[in-house]
Length: 311
Image (cartoon, rainbow, N blue to C red; front, side):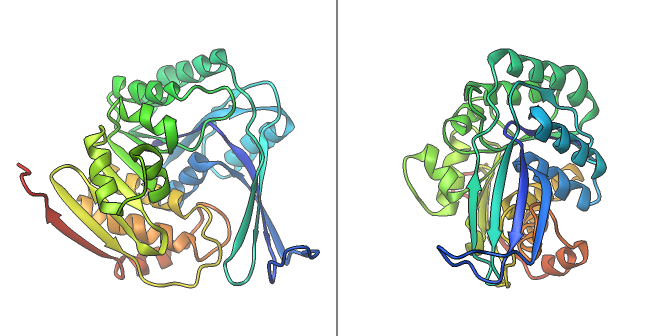
């Protein structure tokens, strides 16, 4: 079972429209409402990949109660800490060309005491039942970035490998605890490395900062990975994207499920890239057609080379 932590959960509303035009009235052809936030999206893709997931984080108010009920209905085993306030809503509008506009409300505020309650829940109840943990997404108001180091430390104390998908100061703090996997976008890597750089160079730099395996994604440009001994470049085929929101979360899910199953890194990277690519072909974050994922695995190219001086 993979434990997916989402500090900043949301109710995700995705509207599909024929064309995005500024200033016009947009009339959706379909609307999809899902419990969201990065870790919840990862959990959805974990279950679609045939593994078990559990979800946790903070929720508040009526929207928070709906989110927990919806996660339960999806089989994502929610165990959340209730806080004062109302869980946020995010709005995604996608047109037929795959272009999207995103509006994110601020998250429900949390206190240090709320964070302590979440860490206690994770340590005492959730991690003992897990094989891996994934800490995904930005902090809500009031959650100190240092808590991301606490989350990684809690996972390691329980002898569970931990993956992190976040940028900025929370990523810097998480790296101090040596997460087993860091999976970020090029922009998120740049937020802690002092500027943009090639995806492979960014992955190498993240390993030097404390990550075990570092993976840096670059949208249609594929991804790169490094574990300090070897490096990989991942090339993805061109597709017609319907809704790319959540593709990075699906990538994270495919990677963790594969690593948890004992697959070699190059194979895990191919499955991860296929999962993220398949997600972009359907509306809704963390959703994909498993048959299409299997087709795409054969179209992903993973090139490996050893790093100079690696033992």
